[in-house]
Length: 123
Image (cartoon, rainbow, N blue to C red; front, side, top):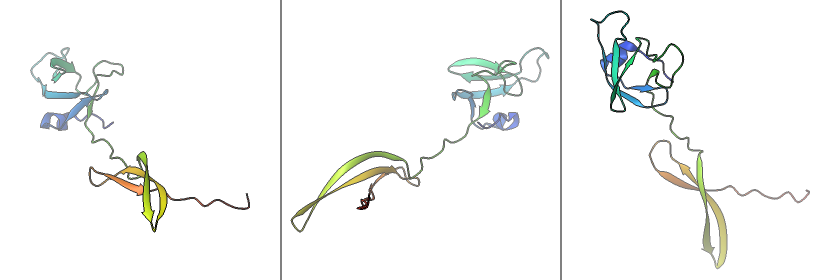
């Protein structure tokens, strides 16, 4: 997870908790006593308070703040399923498996033939 950055968060960059929930309307109150936690934001419809470093408690908590990062895109090699394709070529039925892959560049799926492995006659 990307570490919390107070300046970026106050500029309006997206902030999430350690468990992935979005925190909105993050503001810092400067004219408060030192013992009062100055950073406040909205989480799940309620107002929450954090330390200036984004921590909720002095120990690690699921409510600690982090900067949002885009999730990793699926790689083209991610197989999602198989299907059997039958083709009739010159009166002979050919069967072949195809795998469903996720396309990394476009949010589409793509079917590709599974490579046929030749059997070794010596084995």
